[in-house]
Amino acid sequence: MDDKKEQTRGEQLRKALLYEKKNGYDRVDTAELEAMEAYCTGYKQFLDAGKTERECVDRAAALAEAAGFRPFTRGAELKPGDKVYRINRGRAVMLAVIGREGLENGVNIGAAHIDSPRLDLKQNPLYESEELAFLKTHYYGGIRKYQWVTIPLELHGVIVLKSGQSVRVCVGSGENDPVFTIDDLLPHLGAEQSKKPLGQAIPGESLNLLVGSRPLRDDEGGDRVKLSVLELLNRKYGITEEDFISAELCAVPAFRASDVGFDRSLIGAYGHDDRVCAYAALTALLQLEVPTRTAVCMLADKEEIGSEGVSGMRSRAFDTFMEDLCQCRNVPLRACYEKSFCLSADVTAAYDPNFADVYEKRNSAFVNYGMGLCKFTGSRGKSGASDASAELVAYVRRVLDRAGVAWQMAELGKVDAGGGGTVAMFMAERNIDTIDAGVPVLSMHAPFETVGKLDCYMTFKGMKAIFEAV
Ligand code: MN
Ligand code: MN
Image 1 (cartoon, rainbow, N blue to C red):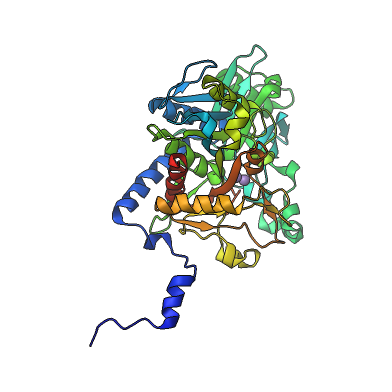
Image 2 (image 1 turned 90 degrees about the horizontal axis):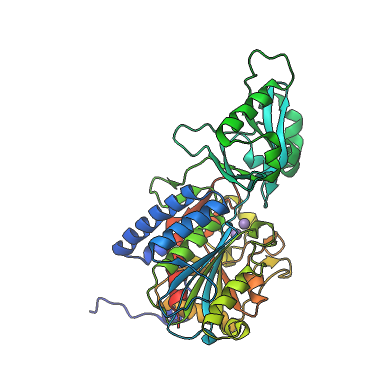
């Protein structure tokens, strides 16, 4: 008798016709698991070095320089294999590897954002109340305010003096640095606060950063704690209170990126959205030799507040960079755009079994199932979405499958539950075929977000396949 039973008709049909989703860990070999770990170690270092868009730009530029990239000057000659980058006002960066084909055949773009939700300082932030010194904050991006109290926070950013001199600030990440925090009520006195809806329990104006308590000695005047803090700041940074007016200072979580879980299969950190995709796009680009089509990586600022402003994806800075590239090769920008492809690399929501009622399980992205592909984002009736065409989705399926990338389709949540956007629509507006894809995240926009290592690595692999696609 034969060992192998003959498949029943049902079994044959199931195998041939049904779409089977598979956990990524059932698809990778040992070599790939090792590559994944090495990749994630680099990613964690990138996260710890870049807690603001400016720091991410610095880190990206350093990695690019080390990989042979040079700042691009308008009018410079470019030949296949040349690697160039341009920084936009210290807060966004564009990089390109020139391909064998002309730019009239279009380029492959990977676009991600490097700004993350946080607490910005107001322009007149420092005050003293009952002999405690605080800094007023103004939140940036969509945060759940209750998550930002009673956690350690660092202060990062720049203060630009009236003279134009720029002073970098980074307190909290050094070995012996102090941290800051925002206080909250004790449960013993929190009865009334606890009755409030989650969104109202912590008002925005109560997100005040505790920065000191020690009064100036041998002084009879007022605001002795504030004055003492200012004296310290003056000694360290050469600033006076008025200089806060021209400062960009952000309070960001003081957590370091760490492995999560007994099996270390996850990474917990601040800023996965969207540095996890930014790092994937960047490192995939840095590994290219001479691609067929020119590859472009765009790391944008201001996505969390609508991509507005001079460093956001809506800024002409991107078009100017692209036009300068095209001009070197005598190609009209519009001809390049209409043949180009953009993968808008941004995170998506991972299905969370603890909050199952907001997800639609059949169309959700799952941790460890790979890069999440979104045909559209937006909210309600696809409002604010750049709905990628069926042709484009088929193209991406083809590219990712050929490269052995674990991927899955992803929709943020239930149709009526909410929604969100990315930079995709601003690329599509430029007449560039665009689709969203990225890493599924648990607790998105929280001070400590969680992602699966396998999904990080697969997104890198997917980005590389997109850049190398012909
Ligand atoms: Mn994002
Ligand atoms: Mn976001």
